[in-house]
Amino acid sequence: MIFAAVDPDDLASCVSCGLCLPHCPTYRITGNDSQSPRGRIELVAAVRGGEIPLDDGVRHSLNSCVQCMGCLPACPSSVRYDRIIAPVIDELASTSARKVMVKRFLFMPLTRPRLLRALTAIAALAQRLHLMPRRFPIPPVAVRMRRLRVPAASKNNRGEVILFRGCVMDMWYRQVHQATVDVLSRLGYNVRLSDPGMCCGALHAHAGIAEPASKLTANVRKCHSGSILIVNSAGCGAHLLRHAEGLGEVVDVMEFVSRHLDESPLDLGSRSDDVVVVHDACHLRNIQGSHLATHRVLDLFYEVRSIPDDGLCCGAGGAYAIDHAASAKHIVDRKNEAIQSVLDAQVRYISSGNPGCSGQLQAHRPQTWNALTIVHPIELVARALGSEDRHQSHHQGDADRS
Image (cartoon, rainbow, N blue to C red):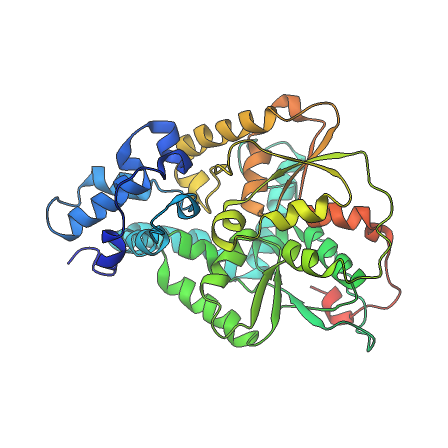
């Protein structure tokens, strides 16, 4: 049976009310019901029941899902669309051996730190020579990466946490890791780093490459069983939360800071006049449900503005922006219009807690945004606390070398 892994009870729970439609980015740009959660559920049920064939049109409608899960909090019937679409994407990917091989090849650097580092250096050189396409969703990177400075462990601390370094975050957004270490240390926590290059499998899972994703997630679980794992990539955090059994606690860094900042003796200083526009990453808003923590924390230091689009996706979606470039461009254009509606001369930053979103916004930013900086919220917290210029004289030597 096609789509046998989909629970029929999940399919039956949808009453086709259509309240999900305004929250679906692909429906918003096409107006096509087959490219909405409701329509996709009907297609899956019909294919599963043998009522219609799994033809190219059905495949396209199902594969076009960004997997933003904006439909989950919007659904009054609590339909588990995530449990429906995930096995569908896996099965569709597995039916094309060539596509599976191509995706495995493209994702190979994620599990090979030296290879990813070499490719990052090449990308950095291409950026310097202005050879990198502007629309390619990769942030400005360096030929040589800065070492992470981690304060030596103290006995007088509030506990130990582990910063999950991941793959892409560690190579392309190391400044976010440094800001995370600085802020957590200022809050009084001993910070340990996960092994460099430890991929969690989030991108693999999103692309439907289920077997490697499962193995990579199991490796994280094996290495960090029972730990408090701090994650500063919304996509990684959402994936690890889905498979959190045996992991202890998986928590987004801004959620962790929000919980513990009030308990800290830190002098928060005066509030900046800078204005921050916060983009709520789908994986924080719709899966982890922790997006408001970013607003709460940043509001202590800056004027915070929300985007008036009810959390609509930016079109990044793992590798979606590459696989479905045209659709992703239409989706991010709508996001940019919503952001533009709250911009004025006082806005200095656009903040996002997910690297995919940051890359997507950076790649498609209008020329009028040249004065704006797209930044992770924990970097803004580090700046507000003065952590960027506070470097301890004693550090964990092993951590510095990676």
